[in-house]
Each structure stands twice: as C-alpha cells, then as structure tokens.
Image (cartoon, rainbow, N blue to C red; front, side, top):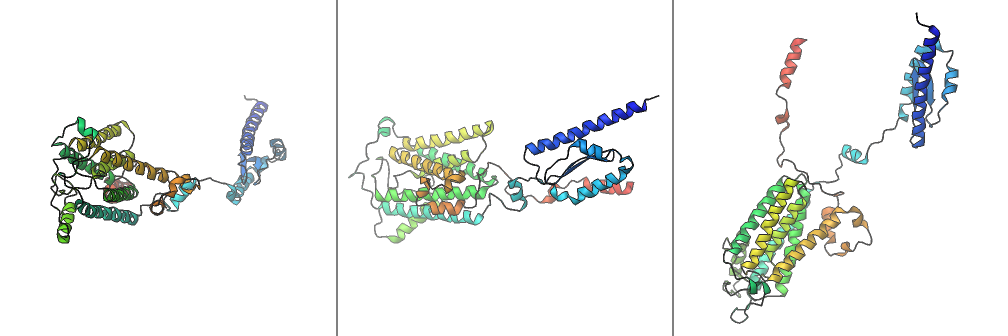
Length: 400
C-alpha cells in the first residue's frame, strides 16, 4: 500500500518545480524588456500560484503559495476566476506583426503596377524612334559623297576584311534576342515596372543618338555602301522614306534602310546591349539561367563583332554605343534599387536633367524589383477547384 505522506510530498515538489519554471519564464521576459502590458496566470490543479500584473511586476512564488495553502476547497472557483481574469485582461496581450504584413493586409503594395506610366514610357520610346528616323532622313542629305570624302581610317578595318554576310548575322541575332526578351518580359510578375524602365531607357538612348548624328556627320565607313539618292526639297519623298524605314524596323535585311549618315553612334549596338542587360538583370542567378545568360551574351557579342566585320559602322560608333547604353542602364538601376540614395542630399546622380522623369516613373516603387515570374494571362479560379470535392460532400451527406 502506498504511503500517503510520500505521495503528498512528491505532488508538492512537482508543483513547486512547475511554478519555478513559470517564474523563470517571466524573469526572461523582464530581461528582454518585453513585459510591458503582459498578463499571465499559472494555475496548477485549480490553484493560482503565480501572477504577473499588467505593469510587468511579478509576485514571488513563495508568497503566492503561502496565500493559497488553505484554499484546497476553492479549486473550481480559482479556475473560474482565471477564465474571467484572462478575458478581462486580454487587451494586455501584445502580438507584434511585421510592417510588411500590415501593409499587405491593408492592400498597399510596395510594387504597384501603374500600367498607365508604362504606357507613357512606351509613347516616349515610340516618339524618339520615329523622330530618329526623321533625323536620319535629314542627315542623309548632308552626307558627303564617298568620291569626295573617302572613309575615315579605322584600325579594325585595317586588320579585318569586309564580310558581306556579317551584317545579316547581326540583325538575325538581334531579332532572336528581342524575341527572347519579349517572352521573358511577358512572364515577369512585375512586367509593368520593368517594361517602363526598358521603354524609358530606349527612348533616352535614341534621343542621344539623334543628337550625336545631327551635330557630327561622318562619311560612309566603307566604299561598298550605296546610299539612296538625295531628295533635297522633296518633302513628300522624305515622308515616304520615313514611313518605309519605320515599317521595316530600320533593318537592312528588310530592305527598308537605304540611307546613310546614322553612324555615330550604332543603333544596332544599342539594342543588342540594352536587351542583353535587361535579360540578365531580370532573371534568376541559378545554374540553368546562367547558361541562358551565356547564350544571350554570345548572341549579343557575335552580333556586335559582325557589325564591324561587315564594315557598316566605325569602331568608335560601336564603342560609344556600348558605353552610353551600359552606363545609362547601371546609372538608372543604381538609383532605382537604393532607396536611401534617392533622398540623399549628397547624391550627384540626382543632378541629371532627366531626374524628374525618373522620380515620376519610380515614385511608388519602394523596394528592389524581384525576379519572380507569373502566368501572363490570369487563370479562372474554376480551373483550380478539386473535382473530388463535390463527390466528398455527397458522400458525407449520405453517410450522415
């Protein structure tokens, strides 16, 4: 037969250990400085042994045990009192929620789409592309005849003879890169933000190109080039040339580019470099995607080399085009991806004349755009319903 004294002694020791553990928990919360507004009651077998007031002050467990030694008959009342006290002081329980979750719960996005801004950027790019073709038509009338002004000396041309098929490779590679980027862009989750960045930079680059080709007109880089006849005062003929150039995408492979003068700097190099930079920036850095980056880089690099191999541009045209495109891309994304840099008074990047356009496009983009993908066309929720769900409901009804 068991000894009642030993059982009672074991029960007291067990209860004391549990109270000491609760006291240690409260002491840890006090050390962390997070006990403000904390309310806790420890009840063991109907007895309230330890209390923490809303101000964070804890009563020693010895005093609490002495206060409740003779309350063996009040177990049910203690349990009811604990429930009432908990309901009464439930406002003292504090749950910290991350700020990002609060913003998401309120329906506020740190990366709003704002497609209307993307439309404005698209209009900006289209306007500069059309204006560039108009400028090519104007500059074409000023290009000196190659019999009077022969091509300027170029070091690359001294070592590499002209390859007739090389420029076709350039334009084919360019079309492949643009197609790959367009497909990748369609599957981006934040395609609106990325799209307006691409269109804005494209418009800026062609604006600068339009200025450089107008202020300095270079002679043809090679004697093989055949320029279309000059129209001089024929305005209608010039408009027809502009429309033909725009409809053919400004490509020689389509037979739409027969004019000269758009040498400094290379528009083909601009598109090849800009497309590759966007492909690389807005895609993951996994092994499979790195192989994809290498393929795109090879397409771009081979196309740029073929521009020179075809003697369609001077080497300085390609170098200047690459430098301006890459610097403008890095400049823009440095400002876009650093929130503290935007507001810094010592940020000299904000002194550019196009800062107002940057602030307009990036005003509500409060964080770095992640490389996440989504289906471009929203799928109806009906497609995700479980076909077995209705069957399980019918079955459960029958079982009942």
